[in-house]
Every structure is written in C-alpha cells, then in structure tokens.
Amino acid sequence: MFDLGCFNIHQVYAWKPGFDRNNFVRWAKKGLLLRLRQGYYTFPEYKGKPNFALYFANRIYRPSYVSLHTALAFYGMIPEAVVQITSVTSLKTLSFTNDFGEYGYKSVKQDLMFGYDLKPIADGRTFQLARPEKALLDLLYLYPFYNTGQELEDLRLDEDFMQDELDRERLEEYTLKFENKALEKRVRLLINAYGI
Image (cartoon, rainbow, N blue to C red; front, side, top):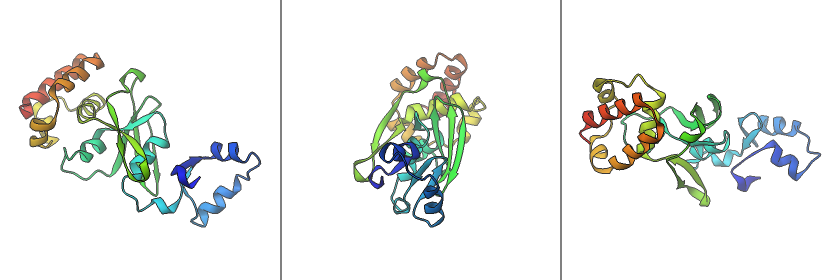
C-alpha cells in the first residue's frame, strides 16, 4: 500500500479479505500509519514531502479538485498563507482535520466540476488543481459577499498576475458556463477593480 501514497480500508480488504480492521487502530497508535479521515490512511514517511497534503485532498474525498484560496495561494495570486486546504466537490460540503492540516470541501453542481489541470508532484504523482480563472470563479460563486469593488480589492489579488497571466478570455468563457447572472455581475466588478 505504501506506493499508493494513501489508501482506504476497502483496498486492503480487496487485497486481504480476512484482514483484521483493529490493526489500523493499533498501527495508527504506534505511529506506523497516519489516519487521514475515517477509513483512509497514509504513512508517516509522506509527512515531509512537498505538496502531498494537496495530493491527499483529491484522494480522501472524491470527486474533488483543489481550488478557492488554496489554488489562489498556489499561483501566488493572494498574499496570505492559507491555513485550510480548500477544494470543490460535487458531493456534500464537508471538512476533515488530520496530521497534514485542515481540509475543507465546498459543494457545487456536477456540471460546475471543470476547469482544473493535473499538476505533477514527487514520485510521478499528480493532483487536480483549478486553473487560476476557475479558482477565482469558484470563490466568487461560493462566497457571494464579494459583491462590491471594495470587497474585491480587499482580496488583494496580485495585480501583475491579474494583468499579465490571467486569461480574460478563459475567465469569460468559464463565467458563462455557470449560467448565473449574479456571478456575471461580480466578474464585471472584478475586471473593473483590477483593470484586466
């Protein structure tokens, strides 16, 4: 199971049907395993490896992709360090805490599960990360209080990134897919606030 990075108990039962589930608790107490959430485990060796916390975010609650504040911080678009690893899912809104941090999942309709890429990390693995434009749209959609020019300026988005790297065409194309007039209005405010 080590090569999987993380695993769930059903994978173990598929491999060894008679496996004693009490082993998980014993091994976690001894520090041989780390519990990620109910039924999901990893190994302490992954603790020091960069971006594995993001990799686990996709694995412990599926389908999901890393987005919102975490994705904006990943791209250097916001100045703050992010405490919680935030993701978008088509499942119900949920959160977990484990040795790798706090994980928060915000729910959207299935047809809004788009606009992410596979980002490579160590050992040939990848994790699903929202593109900058989609991370912004997810934020404006899920947090509708960003509805004035001042609120949007208070996000302190990196102006160089907004003007040089953000793909305005993609932003507008993705906005239409949401089919949400209030979001379209917030996007126009964002474009004006940052002179995109």
